[in-house]
Every structure is written in C-alpha cells, then in structure tokens.
Length: 209
Image 1 (cartoon, rainbow, N blue to C red):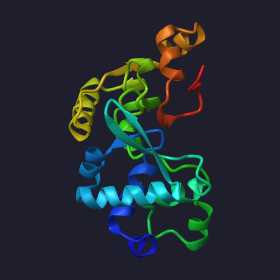
Image 2 (spheres, helix red, strand yellow; image 1 turned 120 degrees about the vertical axis):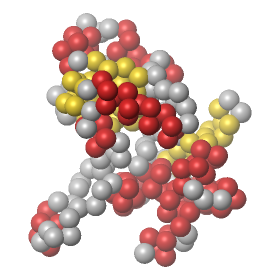
Image 3 (spheres, helix red, strand yellow; image 1 turned 60 degrees about the horizontal axis):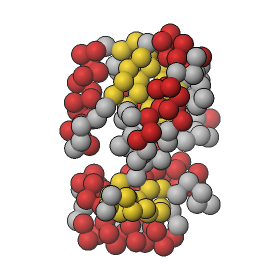
Image 4 (spheres, rainbow, N blue to C red; image 1 turned 30 degrees about the vertical axis):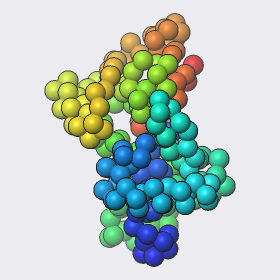
C-alpha cells in the first residue's frame, strides 16, 4: 500500500530510514546499504525527496550527507506514518476503540529503544558524535542507568557491525549523571549541548544544560 501511495519501494524505505532517525545524516553508500536497494535508484529518490523539501543535504569531508528536514510543513504527519511503520506494530486483537485511543500524538519510539531497555534499567540514552556529525561531545553513545556490562558490550559490538564503524560510548550510573549535571561538569555539559538523537528519556532528567 505504501509503495502505491508514495511511488516506489525505494522511496518508502528512504522515508522510513530518515523519519526513524531524526537529527542523523547519512551519505549515499551508507543509505544504499541500509535500505538494500540499487544506488542509482537511491540517488534518483534522494533527488525527488530533495525537490519536495522532505530532506536536505550538506557536504562534509568530501561527502554529501542527507538528513530529514524537520522544518518541512508535513514533517509531523510523515513522521507518524514512517517512524511508526518502522517500529513494532501493535496487536491486531485490540478493539476499534482501543486502537483509536492509542494513536500516538508524539514522535514514535526510536527503533533502538527496545534493545537498549534490554540492557537494564536505563533512564536516558542518546546518540551523538558520528551519528549526528557533531563531535563537540567526544562520544557517540551515552547511556545513563544501571546496565548489564556483558549485554552492553554485546549491544555495542552489534551496533558497530550494523553501522560499519567503531563507536565511542559512555555509561553512567544515575546518581553520577545527576551530580555531573548539577555541578555543570564539562564533559556532560558538552555532550548534552551537542546535536543528538534521544532514544530514551524518562523525563526525570534534563537532556540539556
């Protein structure tokens, strides 16, 4: 159905990728690998999405990066369609009234949220650095909470394989994180001020200082 509505399978895959990863930019070959489509088809659909205004591009280190444009007038509506489609679908057994009541009114959960919650009791988690092309924080993944170190190592190894890059990550206990925020610790201040993709935020902690 989505392919018929939006013109092509490649375009739908691109929309799912971009809307499931706001604040993240991708270069062409990275996109091609993630959507598993021919590069010529990907380039053509990227040009179409650029022409509509759904995504924008920026050159960095001799690479052209593409990112969803959050100022696009239909950003929220498309986000509800394509970010939600990438997430786990709800049960078909729910009643019509129940389905109507559970229609989300905010951006759907990040695709990595469930995996990160499986690491332990996670309060805050986000991606920055290489994921958002903002190296001011000096780290790519920050996870706050009580996590199982063996599971964390496995998760990071899997994510590095998926992203085809070595990742810098930091985990902090909740109390240590709160203390660092309170004293305006330089590292935490830099990380929180950097451009990021928030994966988990239990709203008990500030994500900016």
